Figure 1 (tube, rainbow, N blue to C red):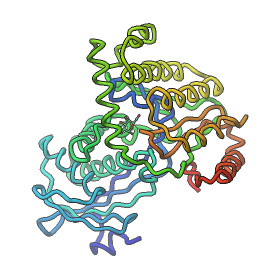
Figure 2: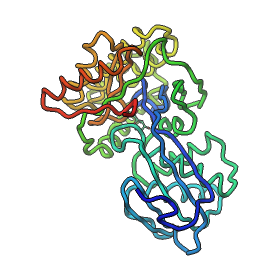
Figure 3: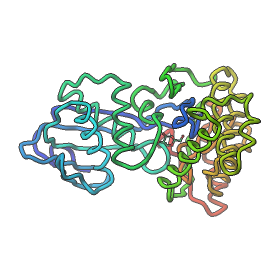
Figure 4: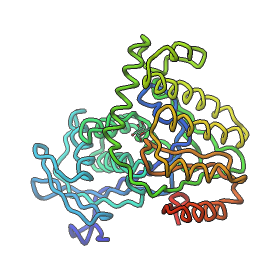
Length: 357
Ligand code: GLA
């Protein structure tokens, strides 16, 4: 892995860091103005920058050993560089002048598994720009610019959860966020519990198009129900949702029940009750929202069958990638090893992602 000095000579003038996140509860609710409960993971992305002597931006991604160049008018083609270009373009659209830069990216956030490596890159990039150029960006505005970078330039019509988590969450407390009002609160995990994240080994395929399709279905359901967003339907109004045709009925039912689960989880002081909500979330994502795959269902079932696990579910957008479990603190390593052995015997290849090895 080449350092900033090895690639560019000299030292960076500013560095930005940001963590990945794992979402504990509240999946596919953020773009419906709903509630989410992510927590930061220990893995981080670092972006080191300085002003460039040339007229172009030069970007080196250490994890990929890959170089990209671009200007304001000539966007890069490499995917990783698109996120950075998007942040710069959105910072300019917000009225800030961004000079050409030398940029060095390094990260140990697992990529493409639902732990928000893209949001970590966006937030770290904007933090580095803020330091170098003294930009008046608070944590929320920074997250909003990062989200716009992803929607406008990476083509994912995501909500605000990932960027808010990268900007505001920490590894000890979960971030309860109302994505409509942006009211938020940091809250501890239930007592004597820890977060375990396992990779299913299934690469996410067609995730962007399927994600955008789900979002469109939710918007259509809201329109048919005559509300601004599905957030405006409470659990008590589920009968109106039942009158919709499939698949809109099931998509809306997931969002309505998932929002209710998050609101219940923030009242939970007991890890068992919290875990049951996670299990119910997985069933809803699998059956109503249809964003799981069989191997992920299997890994989640193996986790849920263990007495040391309070609850488990897929995490992130789905279609493969990671799952998250709430686990008894004392049992973490043993459970992870046993579950992964069983999963391997069935021909799959999983791995522990959090806590990092
Ligand atoms: C992706 C998006 C988020 C959110 C989740 C699903 O991570 O970037 O905005 O919609 O999927 O909960």
